[in-house]
Image 1 (cartoon, rainbow over the protein chains, first blue to last red):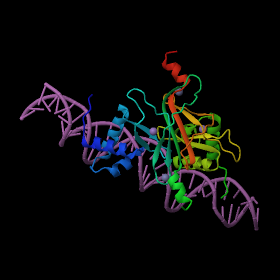
Image 2 (image 1 turned 90 degrees about the horizontal axis):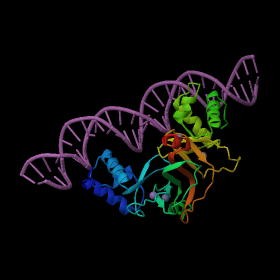
Image 3 (image 1 turned 180 degrees about the vertical axis):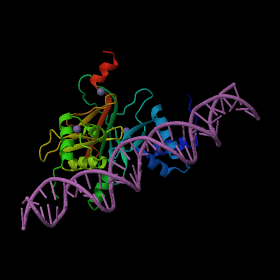
Image 4 (image 1 turned 60 degrees about the horizontal axis):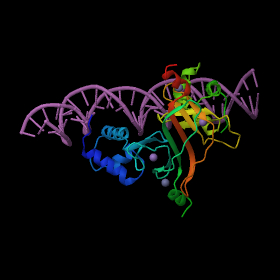
Amino acid sequence: MSRRNTKSQQEVLDILKQSGLALNHEMIQEQMSLNTDRATIYRILNRFSQDGIVHKVVGDDGKQYFAFCSNCTKDGHQHNHFHFRCIECQNVICIKNELRVQLPEGYEPINFNGVISGYCSKCCKQRNGV
Amino acid sequence: MSRRNTKSQQEVLDILKQSGLALNHEMIQEQMSLNTDRATIYRILNRFSQDGIVHKVVGDDGKQYFAFCSNCTKDGHQHNHFHFRCIECQNVICIKNELRVQLPEGYEPINFNGVISGYCSKCCKQRNGV
DNA sequence: TAATTAACGCGACTATGTTGCAATAGCAAA
DNA sequence: TTTGCTATTGCAACATAGTCGCGTTAATTA
Ligand SMILES: [Mn+2]
Ligand SMILES: [Mn+2]
Ligand SMILES: [Zn+2]
Ligand SMILES: [Zn+2]
């Protein structure tokens, strides 16, 4: 099933690329100039995710975040890294260090989902009254 | 605000303790003999979580899982560990190794949420036709 | 330009989890 | 034991996230 280019897809991808963050559906929709439907945005994101253009992380807030794959080569995807979610400014960043977790014997990992939430450095400073 | 003992609380705690797994609301309700309301179970779990009796993890399926704190002392909680969620049998286990993640300068972590999903050893074997 | 069908918009639907409020029932003091 | 306080519950309503079916639109290719 071949892909087609659409304006909505392009804009979603641009927003993800340019922000450099992991964004959820709502954040993306806010930044869209086009009036793209919610369901469509989800479909775009899931398509990107399947195609390995973006990777998906589920936050400890239960929401799905999508980030443009910057460190991935065509066949080698590297998504065993943590993400930091700031509970103040809501930004979610990728923490690039790839890491390996020792699983019990015989366990077969498929998806890695690591999120640490707290205060980012910017929001930390503001809270400490700077 | 002091706590009171109730049968529902007791049974939820018993189920969590005895299973040794991280369970979500639905799994717990299925195992309850009492007809406890959904909202009540959530409230019980959140209370336990606040009181440090259980810890909460959000799976990459977006659901909240709760596990009895077995390795925690009164004041020292250790929840920086991963969890494994089997996409076949749905079991979620704690992987006891506590680990530390290097955050960028100035970031203040509050919550650690690590989940790896895939096939547990039991389900792996079954899938390979044993 | 016309045909094919991927992608979209809309509405309906399924969770999951939370909250307000009145009723119930622990618990401790009388 | 009885009484009073209020933590906890049940129920209904609500909020939000995400998915899906289906008819329509618009990329793409011939
Ligand atoms: Mn990432
Ligand atoms: Mn755990
Ligand atoms: Zn922040
Ligand atoms: Zn399994």
